[in-house]
Amino acid sequence: MKEGLSDRQISAVLYAKENGKITNADYQRIADISAATARRDLKDLIDKKILEMKGVRKGIYYILKHRP
Image 1 (tube, helix red, strand yellow):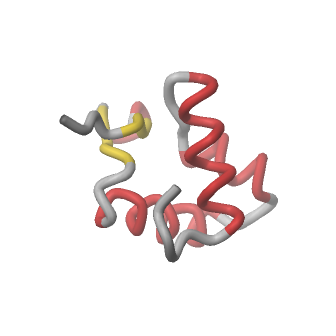
Image 2 (image 1 turned 60 degrees about the vertical axis):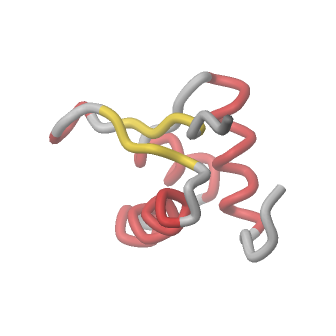
């Protein structure tokens, strides 16, 4: 696991690995956080190239980024 991840973010990555994807709503539920906090954490995981965003508007979800 990458350094600098919070316990919440690690749980998001593990959830995405087990379920194939994670949504903002999934993350809010499993981490007991607000929508804004979930957005910030998920964006940080995208910036760290761990997750990538798919879909549009209300259909947005996040998957693990494939690494070569």
